[in-house]
Image (tube, rainbow, N blue to C red):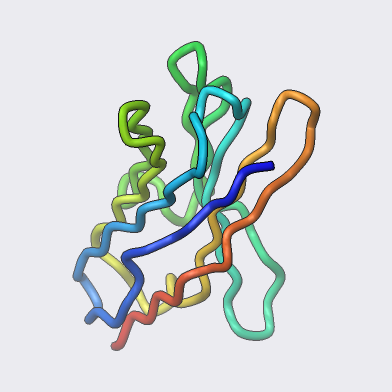
Amino acid sequence: QVQLVESGGGLVQTGGSLRLSCAASRSIFSMNNMGWYRQAPGKQRELVAEIRRIRSGGITSYVDSVKDRFTISRDITKNTVDLQMNSLKPDDTGVYYCAARDFMERDYWGQGTQVTVSS
């Protein structure tokens, strides 16, 4: 089992920046993949950014709508996976969830953090 705790959400104006952080209760090397999802009101949860193969350096990927604006990164000393979000738009509003999948393909989720971008 692993617990994931998100932080860093809040209210920001269009064009602003936020940095989300996901703290894992144990080494992120015990995870194969970690990522950030978001769920906007009335919409399905979508994968925003992901790091795959964390042990071997990490391969990052992004949904098209956030490419060149968001950056996902890992810190193995702090056991965190962060999401730097720049040039935020109202469409980025939603609850952001940290997720992880271990080598047994078990999935873990954080409780979510609200991001609101005002126009």
